[in-house]
Length: 244
Picture 1: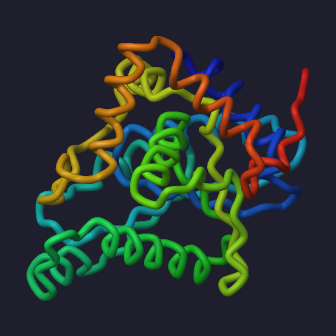
Picture 2: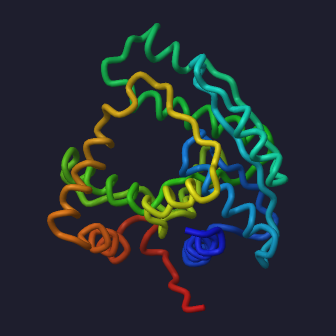
């Protein structure tokens, strides 16, 4: 997928869920993976002509794994003209060496998001953007059905009242396959997640399950996503479809 196509899909989500207001200072959470780097590229392009002016920065939370090298990410941000910040933590050591968590993902996610939110708030940003795409939304719905017995997914826009910070997810209309194509086309500086638990999580299970179901019943992912859009879910029901 080319940049203009990616920007169009990202802007559709921004407009329909009213994600950006005049004067917003938005920090994009950059993990070093394809999703967040794709989101940064799209938002950087949109910022140049969007009618509501906003500023943009990239922020990475370094979990402390020695293999993690963000130098290429930093150089990429500089090429886009986007300021870059790296937040160093010892989250990896706490999770695996101190606490020795047998199921580390949930706690790690909470600590990582907490570190990111605290950092961007201290830097003066009022919004943080995550690179969750359409597949992530459907996989989260599947996890909710399987493990919680309820129909749910993350909201497109979430206001964290205790922090006075808003989380936005502008890639909800983007398929993961298109992100992969975008990464390959533009040679994004992606590096492999050094986490020891990578590839062995409940989310990986949901990812494989969705792929399997979609192969047996082509189009099921789109139908599931349509069910999320039409459902009475927090944040999703605030959608205002645009026809431009």
